[in-house]
Image (cartoon, rainbow over all chains, first blue to last red; front, side, top):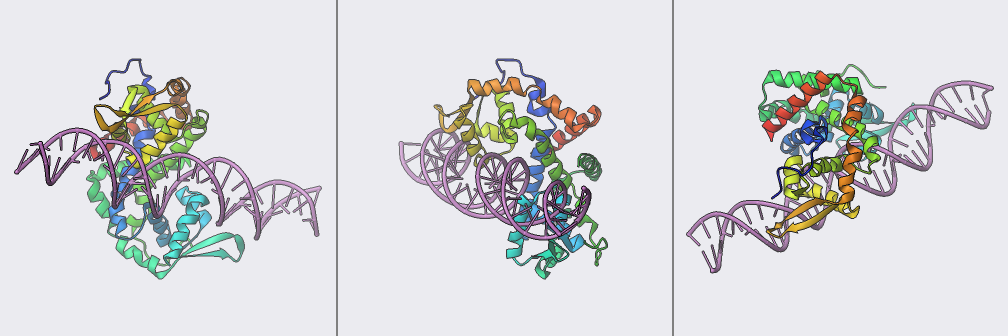
Length: 150
Length: 150
DNA sequence: TCATGTTTGATTGTGTACAATTAAATTTTG
DNA sequence: CAAAATTTAATTGTACACAATCAAACATGA
């Protein structure tokens, strides 16, 4: 057991409770974990799911465009995309008009995942058991903050 | 270049913008990245910093208690704590009253880090350039949601 | 045009995250 | 008490994240 009363006074700004960073960090991981069992049925990880959200919407995106939208760099995306290529869910090819760019495209199996993922947002929402108004308010607030910082 | 108008209608619930998960995930990483250059001066990573926040407050905690507070399991904490032990910042010893538990304690060098970390919260706050009221509101909201889900 | 600078991905290395399994110690129960 | 169940860390394996570096392709300008 540990002592509940520390021997020295503690700077309240250095307490976990009073930081913005920690609840953000922990909540993000908890929500990812809430997705995990549902994504497992699709054989997807959470970051892979985010890539597919973008590909289902745009059909084709360069690695650069994916990275800009997801705020991830090629050190993260390249191996992730190679795994999706190995499963024959996406294609990776150089843009003939700019050989520096790699265009990611959807294969039929990757396109087909969309139908199975359709119910996911509602399932997650049910799982979080959160009032719709709170959900919307928080989403908007986070989105605003994100675009301000990015 | 990619087409801006997708060839098929898209389920709006499957768009990145309309998810709660993505802004949470991206914002969490952005804030971690804002800490990084400041933490680098202390030779700390962000999760290591969170461990020290708890240790500065409680002096001693078991791995289990750290995991409960940070929502991290031993597969994450054990190697992290071993790295801190190698730097002679913390101690790891079995609880003689329950040999299953490992008690993490602060060494002088680890305690001394606190003085250098004191200015960090304010530096981060300045860096985020966010109104105090927004900061507090978001922090409270996230904290509430977190304790509800955990 | 060709030397310089920029853009884009890939690679490497370190450090999380976490599921799944194992093993040891403790607690509970019949 | 002894068998069974639980708790606690550690281990293993997979998959991010990201800093730093590299190399190729493109853009720019004197």
